[in-house]
Every structure is written in structure tokens, then in C-alpha cells.
Image (tube, rainbow, N blue to C red; front, side, top):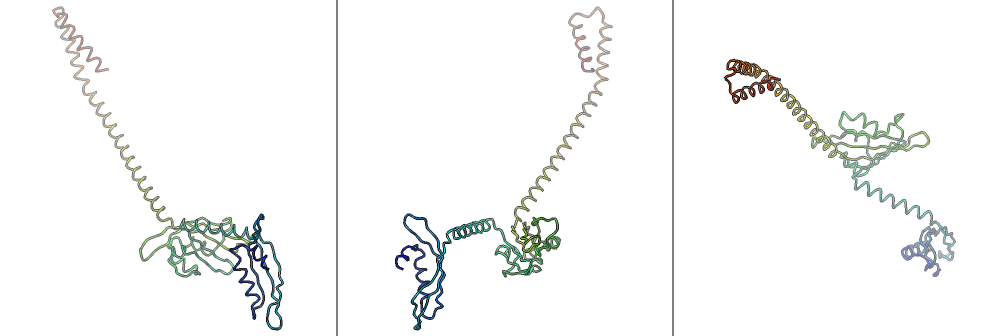
Length: 288
């Protein structure tokens, strides 16, 4: 017995000894059921489950232990992996501030995580859907009713992805709750509903503010563009009017220059003639 005890992992040894000691105590039912790790130098650790029954004499003293030893290494490794995955999932849910809501469609029993209770302002773990629906903003209540009561719609496949609002009467404000719901089936029949809920109020309000800013900026740009078009139109109209108003004075300047050239005739010296030619060329250029 002592040799067998030595092969038990140190972390399990005391627990196994206590389990056997309890089984052989006077007045006990003699049963023991304990799992532990065996460590043998040069070999891989094994996890075993020991189950048995102590035999007692007429004085109530144990004189024999009968039992079985089952290798559950594989099962133990799977259980450990599942526990680790579950811990990782719980950590991720906590970090992401997610709430979990579970509805048994057969018993209609509801269980909620602490985060869901916090979101809905509830205190007890098992709640009535009607109590939760009272916290939902009235306009969103039909959608939330279908979800929280587990109404499976044909064509909704395995679940829903919805957004509804909660109304806080004390603070007079709305909270936006994003919910992903998935049904659990037995055959074609939905038997349970599990929801993941997240408060996305900050994100929703930030997006709304951003959309308002974009809309306001778009309106400002549209107004600026309209003003620019109006300014260009006014400038074009001014240029046309200014050009038209200059036509008549320029035409007269040209006519008088020609008359002056004809009147003076051969008496013009070369320098004066060059001046008149320049005046007439300039007026023709400005009127074309």
C-alpha cells in the first residue's frame, strides 16, 4: 500500500489518503471514489479513478478494500481543456463587458449573468421576461418580446441579431443594447435560447454625433458651393455688362481717330501718324 501511495502525485496524495481513511472509518458506508494522478519516473503521467468498498468485521473494523482502478487520462485532459476554454471565454466576456441570457424553452426558466441584471436594473438571478420587458423602450418592446420569450420565427435560421433600447426612468435616458441570439435545437425543435448582450450606447451616440457632423459639414460645403456658383455668375454678368458698356466709347474713339487722320491728311508728321495708328489698332483689339 505504501508503495502505491508513493506513486500518487504529491498534490493529490493527501486527498487520496483522507478518502481511503474516511472509507475505513467505523460507521462509514465504506465507499470511496477518488481521482488522482500517478507519477512513475520515465513514464508519462496518468490520471486514474479509484472506486471501491471497504469490508468490515463484526466489530465494525475494516479488514479489506475491494475496488477498481480506471485510466481516465484522456477524459481528464478533455475536461481540463474544456475548463480552460470556459475560463478563457468567461474572461473574454468580462473584458468585453458582455451579458449572457439563457432561456430554457421547455421550463421557461431564465438565468442571467450579472451584466444582464445590471443592464436591466434587476437584482435576482432568475427573472420573469415580463419584468425585463418593462425596462424596454415601448417602441422596441414588440421586437424585444419576440427575442426574450424565445419566439422562433420561420426563416430566422439559428437565431437573431437585433438592437433594442432600454429606458432608465430614474436618469431619464435610453441605453442601446446589441443582442445576438442563438437557438439550441433537438432535431427541428428549438429547446433553448442563449443571448449575448452588449451595451453599445456610447458607440451608437458617437456614431450619431459623427453622422450629424458629417451632415452639417456637407450642408456647409453645399452652401459654399452655391455661393461660389452665384459669385461666378455675378462676375460673368458684370464682365459682360462692362464689356458691352465699353463698346460704344471705343467705337467713337476709333471713329474720331479716323476722322482726325482724314482731316489732317498729308500735314501729319510720321510721329503723329504712328500715334493715330496705335489708337485705332488698340480700339479694334478691345472690340473684338
